[in-house]
Length: 338
Ligand SMILES: Nc1ncnc2c1ncn2[C@@H]1O[C@H](COP(=O)(O)OP(=O)(O)OP(=O)(O)O)[C@@H](O)[C@H]1O
Image (tube, rainbow, N blue to C red; front, side, top):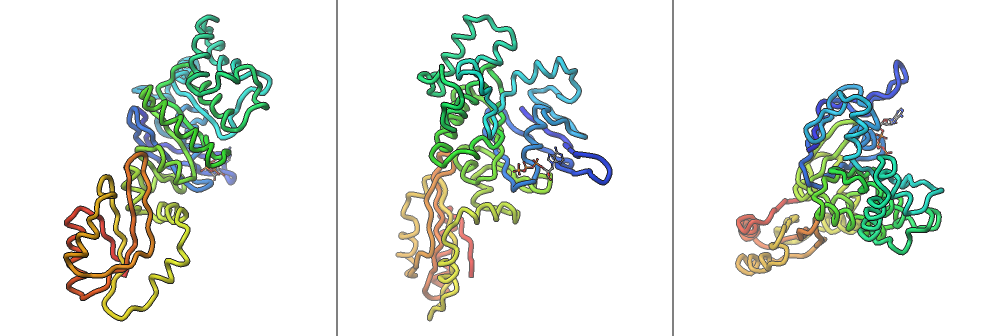
C-alpha cells in the first residue's frame, strides 16, 4: 500500500544543512495500523509528512497504492492527496468555523453538492460521537472532541490512508485511549490503512499491528508489535520499553540479593492463551524448585494478552536447569538474567 524507497530529506543547504532522513526504506501493508516510534528529532514528523508530500524528499520514491507521488504534477498530486487523510497533534481546525463547517470544508473544496455534503457530515458526526456539538466552534470543545473533529474531517473524502502525526500527544491518558479506540474502530470498519507516529510505547502497544523504530533518520528495528515489544534488539527500542517499567529500583535490589543455595533469575514471557495457563506451577511442582516473583506484568498488545514474569528459581543446579528446559519446551520464552 505504501512503499518508501531510499527516502532522504535534507533541510537547508551548505553549512546549515540538516539531514532528517537518510536512505530510509519502509513498506506498509493495506489495512494495517503501522506505528513509527522515535525520540525527539529522530525524523518521525518528516517521515510522515513525506508520505503525502507535505514535505518533499530530497531523494527517493514515495509509492502509495501503486502510484509514485514525487513524479506527479501538482494537479495529479492534489487529486491523490484526497485519498490520504491526515490528523495533527494540535488538530489544525479552522477556529472561525463550526464543527459542521470544519468537517464539510474538504467536501466544499472539491465541489460536492450541498445535499451530499449534509448527508456525509451527519454520518461522520455520528461516527465520531459529536452529533450534539455540530454548531459549536473549536474553542468550545475539549481536546478529545477537537481531535474527533479532526478525524471526521480527515475521513470526509473517503481516504484509503490515514496519517496520524502525534495525534494523541496533546491529550490526557483517558482521552488518548478514547481516540485510539476510535482509530481502531475506523480501521476495522473501513479497512483503512493507518500510519501513526508517536514517542509513546503505550500508543503502539494499544492499536498497532506492526511498528518501526526510527533513530537518526533511519529505521533501526521493525516487525510485529509483540515481537519488537517483547524481544527488543536495538538499544533505542530497549530504552522505550525500559521507560514503561516503573520498579527498576526495587528490582535491582532483588536481583543483587545474595542467596544460600543455587539460584538464577529468569524473565519468562507468556503470549496469547498461555498467559492464563498454569504452566509455571505445573513445571515447578514436577521439578521441585522454589521460586520468588521479583516483577510481573500482565497486559495486552492490541487485543492479544501477554505476561512477563521475572522470577528467581532456587534449588539444585539440575532441578533449575530442568525447570528452564521444561518451560521452554512448553512454548514459553525464557531469558536468564544471572
Ligand atoms: N524545517 C526544518 N528546517 C531545518 N531542520 C529541520 C526542519 N524540520 C526538521 N528539521 C530537523 O530534522 C530532524 C528531524 O526532525 P523531525 O521533526 O522530523 O523529528 P521528530 O522525530 O518528529 O521530532 P519531534 O518528536 O521533536 O517532533 C531534526 O534534527 C530537526 O531539527
